[in-house]
Image (cartoon, rainbow, N blue to C red; front, side, top):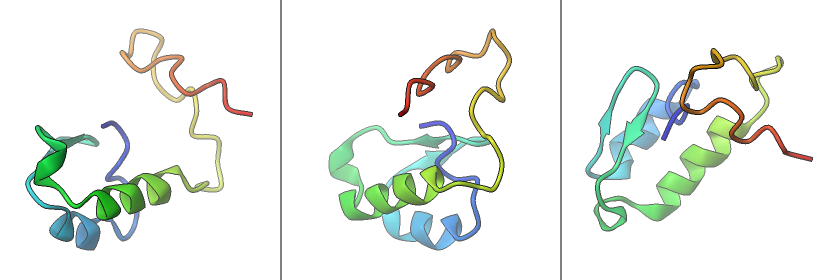
Length: 73
């Protein structure tokens, strides 16, 4: 999951999450049964909070996630 760990306060949540790995800005989970779903929900909510700048469309057009989530209303 891209963008789930790049915010202040992510580390304590990741410590409580359960079995996972992280990359440069990604969170990798093999099985949902391996993690605490409530903590995962909190990570998703916190990652989606506004950062005071437009975070959409920051990726290059060749990025695999280009265009995903841009239809929010």
